[in-house]
View: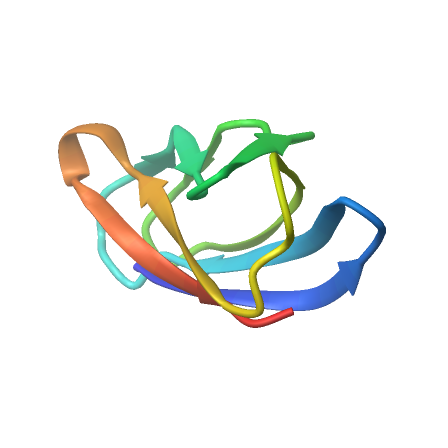
Length: 89
């Protein structure tokens, strides 16, 4: 699985971006959750990718305090593990 943060847009207390996911494996993989330090992901819906499939998933993150200049979101793929996603607004 490869993930990239693309089309990043900053608003006053939120950050909107898209996660471009590509499943290079052969089995289905589900992105079930996204966590962000000091923030809450909104407008996020779990997505399943079949082997060889690519998808773009929109995300909006609201921060409790000042928005960081760079942060790592954690992508949770359930039984398939977790992975970091570097986001640079």
